Image 1 (cartoon, one colour):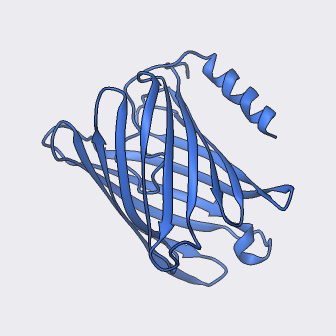
Image 2 (tube, rainbow, N blue to C red):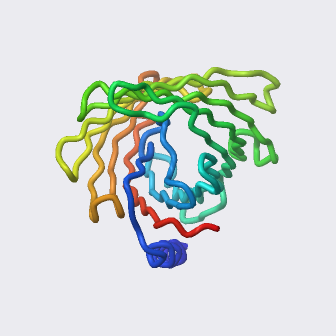
Length: 234
């Protein structure tokens, strides 16, 4: 499984990498940015908790000038066994680009599946999210999210919200932190850092996450890799 993931990363990296697009990973609070037109990115990470280890891969491409499409999912390892655990299908568009002294707005529509929550039934949960990004200064950006998820198995809607900060410590390191609730009974916090291996081309990150409601029981650690491509789509 891990060997196959590494092969995918190597193939993607071979496309040629670039540019100045940013993304939310490893934060759960999204930002008002998308990858550059006709370009792609691959976000991959491993999250380890007391009960399960998750292996995620989320490829995303800007198929035009302003439409980012993401299709991905995760594998879960538990008790020496691994299984396909999550699916995510998402589109995202910028309503107003982020700029110095200008708040950015975007809109996200997605469909997520979590078979664990419903005893492996094929339940699909639709969600709508509005990320906003406010550049406090040339180093600090504040991101907020407000949205709603339709929980199909429970036949009801729940609110999503998030608040995060992104501080550019130097040309290679970003310090990140957030609090969020994604349609659950628990509010979480997360903090960590991103580091550019190759500036604007390949980035690694690491985070620590925990729950205010079940402190210690819901803690997890993550390590991720993000790659960005040159424009290559027709």
